[in-house]
Each structure stands twice: as C-alpha cells, then as structure tokens.
Length: 164
Ligand SMILES: Cc1cc2nc3c(=O)[nH]c(=O)nc-3n(C[C@H](O)[C@H](O)[C@H](O)COP(=O)(O)O)c2cc1C
Image (cartoon, rainbow, N blue to C red; front, side, top):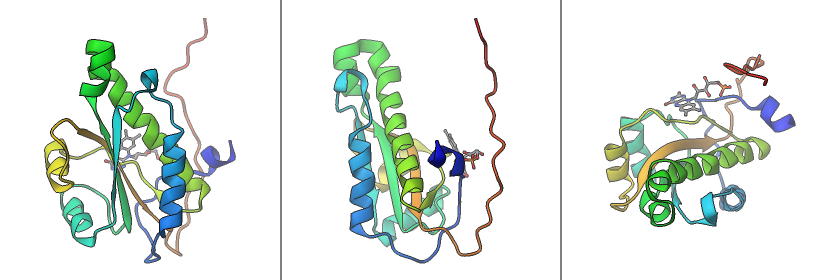
C-alpha cells in the first residue's frame, strides 16, 4: 500500500550508479511474478552498456538512466499450451506483470523509474539484439532520483468502476 501510494513516474535520474546488488534484488522480485500456467513466456534484458543505452535513448524515452530493463513477451512459448489466447494475450500479460513487479521493487529500493511503452518494437529489438521470437512490450529506465526532485502528490483514479 505504502509503495503504491508513493510511486510516481520520474523521468530524470541522478548520476549515481546502480550496483549489481540492486539489479539482482529487482530480478529476484521479477522471478516471483506469476505467469500463465507458470510458463517461461517472457524475457528480461538488462542494459548497462553505455553504448546500447545511448542507442535506446535515440529511439525511445529513457533519458540518462544508468540501467534499462526491457520486458519482452515470448508468444511462441504460451501459444504451444494456450493457442491463440496464449499467443495474443498471456505472454504479453506475463511480461507486463513482470514489469509491474519490477516497477514497485524499484520504488521500494529507493530508486525511480517510468514505464515506457512508446517505442517501435523493431527498432528496440534490433538495438538489444533480440531473438526472432521476442516482442519487446515495456521498458523501465532505472536510476536514483535527482536531488531537486519534488514530485506532486497523486490524486489517483479508476477510469470506471461498475458494481453489480
Ligand atoms: C503502458 C504504459 C505506457 C507508458 N508509456 C510511457 C512512455 O512511453 N513515455 C512516458 O514518458 N511515460 C509513459 N508512461 C507513464 C505514464 O505516463 C504515467 O504512468 C501516467 O502519466 C501516470 O503518472 P504516474 O506514473 O506518475 O502516476 C506509460 C505508462 C504505462 C502504464
């Protein structure tokens, strides 16, 4: 509850590096995210390379984040078991859930991020040298908050609630 209330999308980062221990902690939480049929139908790419981060910066909004995580769906894996629904829905949902777990872990560890969805799949896939089967669905640029950060409080909303 506390973490969800505190979280905001932050698009700027301090120069401070993110160490391996922090990255491992985030990956440990991602391991706990549920997937349809407990299948391994998503993939995480951890980008620390300055060169690759710069390439990503050119095609999407990741600013100067010292680490960038890319969450890809593996539709071929879920389609084997769940057919069309697995291919078109489950693997994408599973990659998305994993990204949500990571986003909250980032916040809990005192770092900041913004979910980035606005990118060209092909361009991103090429930059991260993705497998032919993977579809990048979400990107999390991760870093420490800048010192002058003063985030507004969130009001929060649910676009529509229906009670029956
Ligand atoms: C699926 C999805 C895609 C998003 N894509 C982008 C994006 O490409 N660029 C960006 O700056 N923010 C992106 N955001 C962040 C939203 O703009 C942000 O979550 C929303 O404005 C609410 O603000 P908050 O996260 O601070 O509560 C995305 C969020 C989601 C959930």
